[in-house]
Length: 65
Image (cartoon, rainbow, N blue to C red; front, side, top):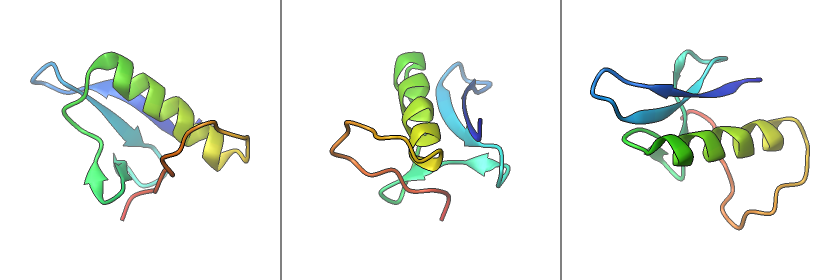
């Protein structure tokens, strides 16, 4: 598992890239300020993409820029 959903000190959620030790990005947008559900879903999708599994999402996931 490379991507995890984490809660920040302001009680928002983010997707964190453990390999780069930074918040992950998608389409040039940092994945911060999310709901818990959004962060968990995006982290799962990102791990699936990195793991080479098929993902039924029209939005490609990009790693940290």
